[in-house]
Length: 330
Image (cartoon, rainbow, N blue to C red; front, side, top):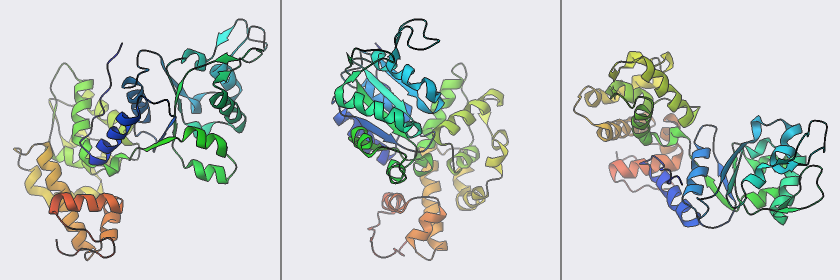
């Protein structure tokens, strides 16, 4: 039996999500993981399984977006021998394989309405029927689904069944994109460096770390993982700014960082947490100055939600935030 995964984070919103997961892990309630591509939904799904009372049984991942639609019913529910031309032998479906364990349906927003109907019947009856079969088979599974788009919008456009939505959305968990939890980037970089270069120690310069922290990360954690893996293959014992791809070196946002925080990343005595504190506090101070004290404009300039921006103002400046008017007292 494998031990539980750990979610690498120091971000307060992520910590709150982990607390929520631990409270509901042992229930059989369906979970819907919501987040952009690359935020780590599969990691969260496996984390839920590993800390649940089903951990000794199977965890079955199904990437629905990569599965041909004409094979999906057979893959999910199995088929009987001779049920169609190429069905040379009986095949157990993935729902059967996951019996007494957890099944993770990744990208459920990519499933056709026909398969949605079949999934709804399984969730309501807790029974499956193989393609070409005549006998219902009971299954005991914990369902975790993921979506990268707004399912309610799909419902309005008649692309997703409303009744299925309420079946899978018992416990919704929204995973924030990496750009809204930049304080996790140093920890993740350190983790991935150890993962990809366990035989040697690779450090990272302060300038390189600043560039990574302030990149927009459209591909989220998956993109960060790939960048660190690529850089670790070609760098020496220390990642310098020149080792990063061009988009990081030429990032216009980096110029703001250099101007705001030159004293912190030129001092090699600073550790990760001190650099993050220095960068974020100076960025917030400068953004508020440029916006004339308008929190909404400052948050938008930094690519943060207003709530995240206000949380950081409280953290760094012990400021009481007004929900109705801007704070100009930095």
